[in-house]
Image (cartoon, rainbow, N blue to C red):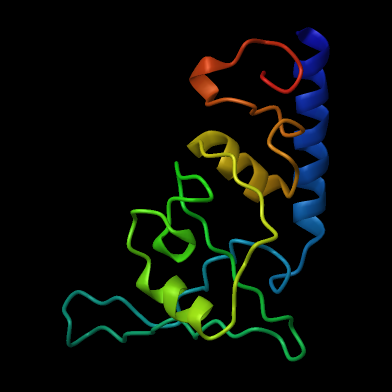
Length: 139
């Protein structure tokens, strides 16, 4: 268990070091934009400043991530399930069907897989966090 804890500390340190090197276009979530207005004693003494809209860099890939928590492959109406998903149904009727995906059907493993880009067992969340057993893939 100590070895795993030490590995997690090393991994966290490496991720933090890499994050510090990332530029704003590569860091997610994007850093909050600095406030360019002025806050005075009254609304009349203040100058508002709305954040600039986030735009994808030129040539960025068009990626769609659909995250549904605590559901399996057959839950959505698109694939015959009982949960109405009209937007996904409309996309599928126009020929867009996402069938090459992985489901964990649990919240913690789904989030771990999405955040890490790895299989949920490889991200040590084979089950929800509260049910961790302390063994590889489930710790």
